[in-house]
Image (cartoon, rainbow, N blue to C red; front, side, top):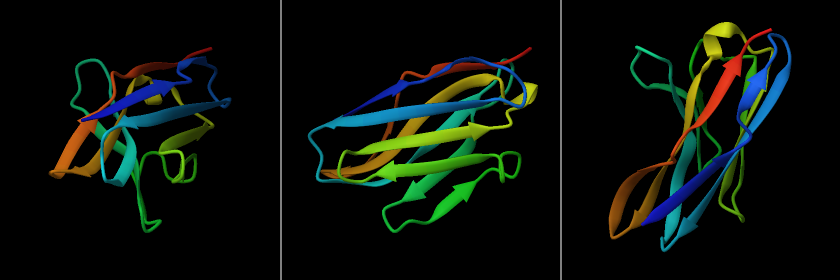
Length: 118
C-alpha cells in the first residue's frame, strides 16, 4: 500500500500564490506517476496536473501557465505551485499516484482544502 499525505492548503487571495505538497510512503517498488486532482462542491473530481517518471507533464487547460507541478523523485514527493489562483480554483485538492507494488495500483490522499477568496 501507498500512503499519500498532503499539506499546504488553506485560504489564498486571488492573484496570490500557494504551494501544495504531498509525500508518499509505504511498501512499493516504484511510483510511475504522481499528480493532483481536485473536486469543487457539486462537481466531479477533475485532473489538475500529473508528472511521470520520465518528466512528462499533463495539465488541465484551466491551469496551464498558472500552476506548476514538480517532483522530488528521491523523496517521493510532489508539489503544486499555484500562482495567480482564481475563485474557480477553490476545491479540495487530492494527491494521486500510480505505484508498482504487486502490479500497478492507484492511490489517493485524503485531500486538502484550497479556498481562493479576498
